Image 1: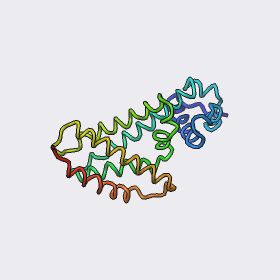
Image 2: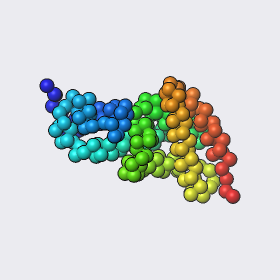
Image 3: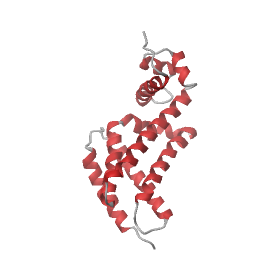
Image 4: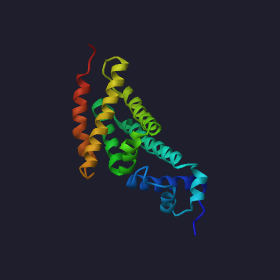
Amino acid sequence: MTTRLPAAERREQLLESALDVFARHGYHETSMNDVADAAGITKPVLYQHFASKRELYLALIDEAGHRLLQAVTNAHLEASDGRRRTELGFLAYFNWVHQDHDAFQLLFGGGSRRDPDFDRAAARYTALVADAIEPLITADIEREHRRMLAHAIVGLAEGVSRHLLRSGGNFEPDVVARQVSDLAWAGLRSAQRR
């Protein structure tokens, strides 16, 4: 017998179950029956919360993106200088990847990038993370230059994360954050008006 949960809690449970199933099997190989079975509910209950598999997947992209954005935007709060903000930002990102492989794969994996709607939804979070980083870059450069560097930082973190997960996903976020932030900080320190 399924325990009756309040709608918000049930939705959260469904998103967690769906993330696990989609991460293992991909979008096309996963059915709504698979998600319902994993959540321990009937398919009609799943359809009460999500009208279609597509809607569910878009909600998952939104949830994963929100988690990433929250992790990165909260990271710099305790930092007093640019070097430390850089390291804390990368630490937050790599902690998120380490703790939530499935969310990273869903947001940045091939399945989300092959469909135009999914790609736009994921790209929105890439832009939001870059928007959050841009004001933290304190170099005396034009705003568009800072914005470009913020996107470069996001791309650097994403590329390193892909490498780490392809290599088995067994890494120490603090070590990786320190190594990658060394590179990023050296570049940020040298940024100047031309």
